[in-house]
Image (tube, rainbow, N blue to C red; front, side, top):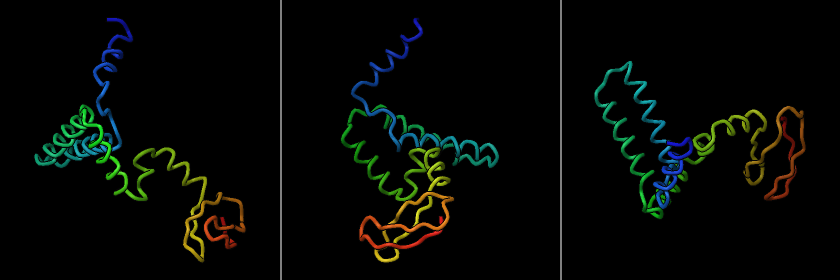
Length: 136
C-alpha cells in the first residue's frame, strides 16, 4: 500500500459524514481522562462510562445526518459559555489570558479587552463610548 493510499481511502470513507466536531473531541478527551482516573480508582462503572463516551464519539464522527449533529454541537458550544475557548483551542485561550486582561465597563458592563503590562490606561467602551481608567 502506498504511503498516502490509506489517507485517500479514509477521506473517501468520511466524505458526506460529520467527521470530528467539538463535541466528539470533548467526549473522546473526557473518556481518556476517565480511563486514566480508572487506572487508580478501579471502579468498573468508570470503564463503562468511558466506553459509552467513545461509542458516542464514534457515532457522531460517522453520522451522515449533518444537520442534527451540527445543531447538537452548537447547543453544546452554547452551553459551555465562557469555557468555550478553553475547549475549542486551549493553547490560544492560554495565550489570550497571558496577553490581555478583560475588564467591564463601569456604566454598561460590556467586557473590554486591554493589553497586559501597559500601566494605567484610559479605555473607551465600544458600546456606550464612556471613558474609564484601568490598570493593566
